[in-house]
Length: 228
Image 1 (cartoon, rainbow, N blue to C red):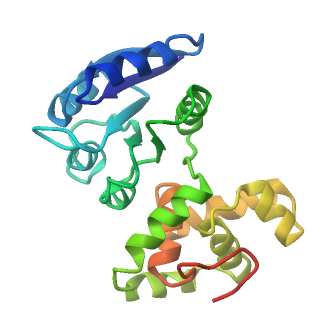
Image 2: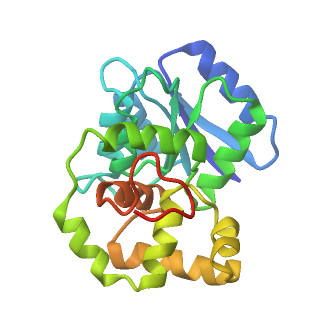
């Protein structure tokens, strides 16, 4: 059973999300919160597997709440997966939430089946990467940020094959798509991804995408199959 916590300042949104989640046999809602501060408190007491976190809220916004729950100074040993709820075009600091360790995001106007899939994906330990949204989001922010030399140095720890896998991963490709592009098995791709995350000390695929853009391995506007 996937235990979820809904953190959103709009009661109608919380009611709607709860109804969708609780219509499933494998998902339960253990609590709700109307701001980030209460969300952090209830997360620590209720220990959900997945937190659906709104970005813009009073008292404490979703970004600050994510940092409290996943940052180096977090309290306790429970680390939930955080799925950001966003209207996208208005939520300019979603990028920072991904850097803080959020496992992905979903638009509030997505279809119910998209929400259910998102919860199951992040609960399973994967990151939710919708290429058409994630790439646009990250590119917008990376264009305005300087490259990080330390990250470029870290790339030296990767083999040529791992660097190529990271580049395709950062372009939003799935394991199956990467495997097809490189003519390797999907299991081999998974092994490469696991080693990349370990070598670069990254939490998940979302942070790998961010890393790829920040270091210049992938440039805004790049397409699969094109090298920098």
